[in-house]
Length: 222
Image 1 (cartoon, rainbow, N blue to C red):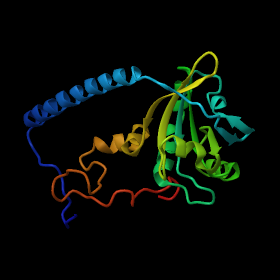
Image 2: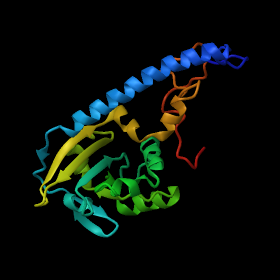
Image 3: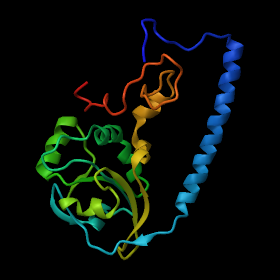
């Protein structure tokens, strides 16, 4: 909902603002500590062996799941929504936009990150060229891997580790809003007065809001 007059936060004294800010920051610090506790619990999750030999196609040809590790110990796989001949998913594309040079730092900690999709390599490579993406991206034949690891008709995040004998184990899974882990643009919008400006948000009356998803675009379409 919008009005002719721009909606803005209320004006207050510096003292009142500082008091309100400190109360909010205290809650943010508590959330940070809770996130640290969840990360510690995540590190203690058990793991399950991956028994099937999944295969993919990359720029250099056919590879197996263990090859996606690129010689590193840990692997994060983002099953993205790109079917053969389909229009790219704006949400998954936002994730790819946010990867940037992050992978150099991830790789430095013995961890590889890759995307997979059912689309053939020629379509993936064309899209990467258009959007200036450089993260590794493999073809998942007939969604075999995505279907086995919880993507369904959407996306999924899976984490794996391998032992010294190259046995691969699954350690973590997430989907739905778990994908916001990668979305720096949401983190930036969340610290502004208007937030993401989506209708599901709890915002003051008069704040600009629109339907979620509908404002999302490929970054070269804005």
